[in-house]
Amino acid sequence: MVPLFINLNRETANTYHLVLSAAGIGSRIRSANNRYYIDVPEPFVDSARDAVNRYLAENPTPVAPVDPPDDAAPPVPVNISGVAVALFLLAVHMAVVTSAAPQDYVTVFGASARLILSGEWYRCATALLLHADAAHLAGNMAGMALFGGAVCAIMGTGVGWLLILACGIMGNLINAIAYGSGHLSVGASTSVFGAIGLLCAIRAITAMRTGKGWRPVAVLLGSSVALLAFLGAGERSDLGAHLFGVLAGLVAGSIHALVLGHPSGLRLQVASGILAAATLMLAWFRGAIG
Image (cartoon, rainbow, N blue to C red):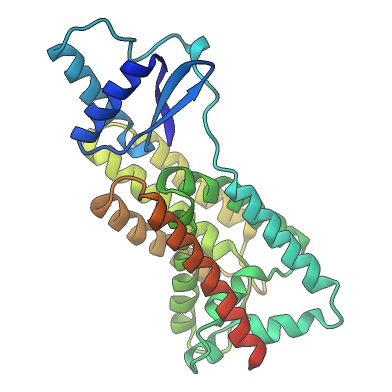
């Protein structure tokens, strides 16, 4: 969600909110220091502005301007869940490397193509939390904080992380099918690239709808190439998983943008977040019991 209409009084904020609701655009009203702000999903910024401008043209009443001076703008809201997930990855890595047998975690929970195809599908999820070394971890922490947080700012925290996790699992599964056997990988980078794919799809569909906003798509694609070069294709972090993660993100992001198009309600966000956490917990439990 991004702040589009700012420094409003209560009556104007309520009016804009009703206009956006009538146009099928989700929005959120915030207040600070007796002033009101309306946040809208990033893909619908242009549509929301056009809807309110049409209303103002048809109803010329003395309301606050759509684009007030920059110095009146509040700080852009940031979804800090990406930082929280990055710290979670760090905590898991520290627990693994300080254990009595760190390599056993890779053996039991790593994304072994042969074992995944033998029925141990839980490895597609558990491998996302394991990392080969500090550099591998650092790259994925940065990716989760940046791209994961950006996805959740658009889709909502629960739905965002569920789709990011799903893209990581799907990327690892397709990668295992592609290799067939004899391949082992770990790392959250598959989900990181899934998040990049989600962002690219949402921004591309928005650009196609509005005819504007292609530059962010190019920036995201460039970022994915740069991150791919940084993470590389080492012993346990491979190119195939990254590419399949991006493809999974492109598909999931396109479906979300075309079917939903705006952040879901609180109930679905909570349910999605619980499902994502439960999926990881059950996967680790399944691996632990053998």
